[in-house]
Length: 603
Image 1 (cartoon, one colour):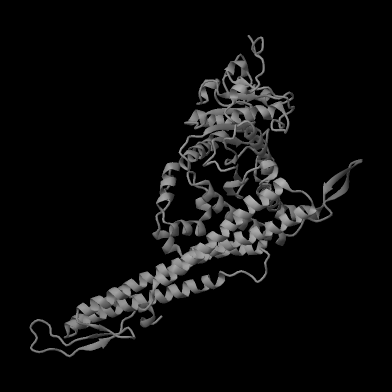
Image 2 (cartoon, one colour):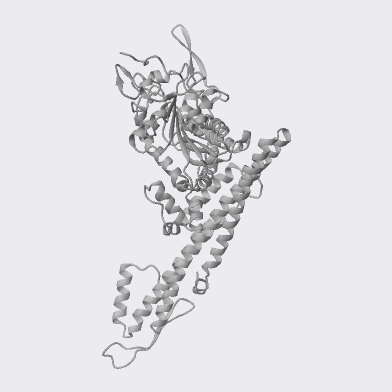
């Protein structure tokens, strides 16, 4: 880059262009939300038929287009801002070098050379003539030493100073040239293909674009206020509020994974960030799965072992399984979970279901997903549900459905007040009921994250009122909630425990909620509480451990008309109705079991 170009560079022009792209992205976001939460939701709630189904399919495609446009506009805006930032830094160095040279009676030429006037060193009899020098960028200790030596020898005192100015000019021009070379391909890459279909390849490309812009814009992103290291939800919220709109847009464009994971940030912000992560990961993982060799069709064969035939895997299938099996299974599980989350987005409006918010997401390991029905930042009643053993991203659909049912039940009993129910898969749940679930470390490790999330619901509050909040746990999820109460401040008003094997404390008064606000359900035929009585949690009492179903624990025992371990949230049941009453703040109206004549376990 030549001196005239850098000297005439106007960062404000690129910053204004960045603002324009950011505004366009905001418009695309608003259009996407209107389609999803008003038009599609209204049609889903009021209309039925093949024509409606077809229209909803087209609206979903249009929403995808707007979401993709929003994401790419955010990247273009941030790339332009990052380019302007780098170029402005180089221009400031050039302007400072020119100004310093002028103050020292030196002149910077159009080619970057520096002319110096005649001058004499102290003790000299006459002036030495002036001259012109050209600098070099990126000097080394050796070259700098040689230049200092030459300046010391030269009879004109201006020579050495002119050389220093020329080197500063050369450094500035080199920095600008490198910025231009760095950003040009990144900006050229930020373009969509020429069709109207947003494919998995488009989203995978968007993830690649994000990585490219993030790499090129490292100095710009590093210059922004950084998120608090291991910050509390209140500190995270304060950091976000103090960012300018431009800075918030940069964080959302370049680090949506960071933004989406920060407890305390507004639900709308976390949702926007996590939806980008979801779409990009979905495209990436689907393309990886499509490129992977599929399992051989001849999975099984028969061999004769002794007198009896045995069914075994074929050698071909075993070779495939040993090389690809684990990754193939994980990809399918992750993509299934992402599809379940998208299905929830698409159900907005169905039976009055409110908009969904994706408050956490990661496909790594067993996966993470936090999905809210309704905006918790404004809801009068909140419920945060923790699933239990075998929970992972692949099975998140069932847990989301449970909280949809709780939302409908609570909403009917809330007397017009707003409700938000949240599925919180924010921990590594035990994956095997025999090998994993008897151990408490899964609960102990996940409990601090649950407490942070609950505190974050206070920090992100956008209305001037305190919500009524309920923790709901199922199976091992109840153990996590008990660990959260034992480890710290369980920031809820009520606790509902369903099918609990134990909660690490032996009395409801230790659950860190007001007396009388712990509610328990044990269905007929649910074997898990009995497993808990043989050592999962609680306090030993005459050879049997206390579970929340035992009278001595002190919980309110809710009437439960479902059977087995998994139907506590079945539609149309008394079990679900009672949960809805508690979530809506009407626990006094819930149906309780009559107290037994004596303790379940007696001396």
